[in-house]
Image (cartoon, rainbow, N blue to C red; front, side):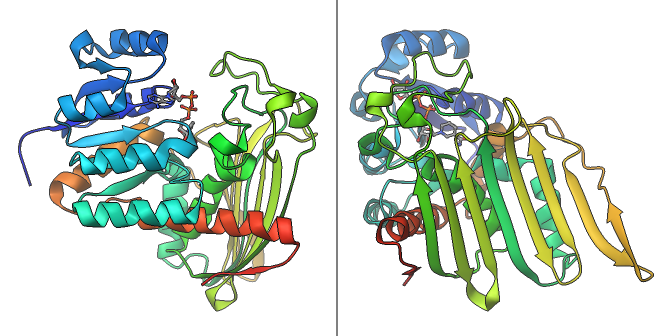
Length: 363
Ligand SMILES: NC(=O)c1ccc[n+]([C@@H]2O[C@H](COP(=O)([O-])OP(=O)(O)OC[C@H]3O[C@@H](n4cnc5c(N)ncnc54)[C@H](O)[C@@H]3O)[C@@H](O)[C@H]2O)c1
């Protein structure tokens, strides 16, 4: 435990902006340095978060050697997570890496080993754990309200949500499409809610139905460019089936694009248990009114609608506030490297299953 605030720096300033807001909100950190290879973005974020020019870097290695950082957020394209995280660990910092931890299991394991050797924490930004409805689900499950959970559906599906950014749709930079981008969040939620049951086998199918034709691009202002069909070599849809220890099955579905209600973007979790079923259905990122709970009372089927309210702090801000509190208290962070490794392992197995048209047995 130390009283001095941790010195935080961020590499990559797209979603890195959400990390900045987390460090500014945490009582345990001060945001002291920013890095982005895009000078315009760097200048805009520096002005937004009042970081002086001498603490702004276009080269992350220069930032790591100059800024004496205790914690570094790695928010660069997926394929760069490994090299940037290893450099930050080597510079002596704890690392909060964006999801997916890496684009291959081999890389993820190398990152885990590097963190162990450096005796630093390597955390993964699974921000969707920090929703009030998800927290309620986790609590209800741990209290036994669902009984034994035997079946989970975990979906993230968009009508038109293909990122208009060159790197997301190029496998060499992203490692894949909808599955590794948004499917990995739902996979993490499904497994984390149940305290990580062992995944025994994975099978799945991925496909490209829209992006390679240049249609169903996201209209989000997050991206400035256009969807480039020529540079699209990833899947825009993925389904998977996981057999887990104890007879649990997990059905995963991630799609950046499909024909459904206009502009609909849904996160859906359904957990079937021997006492009850819980359903979380989030349309277009609403924070409240998303939960239903189905059970029996007095021999009748009943539906309960939990009145779960958001505290107003969620997502990356809540993730950083909680993770930094754990760091200074010397406690394991909520989303430690092992959770990132499992996510990458299952994603990699699902891609392999799709390619080989066979079920993959995990070791
Ligand atoms: N947890 C979430 O909900 C969430 C949301 C969005 C993105 N992400 C993840 O965050 C990461 C970044 O995604 P994004 O949407 O912010 O992408 P982005 O393209 O908007 O931003 C990435 C930034 O990194 C910069 N960059 C690239 N290479 C660099 C380098 N070598 N040195 C310094 N800066 C470099 C780019 O200039 C760019 O500004 C990805 O891993 C993505 O999967 C997570």
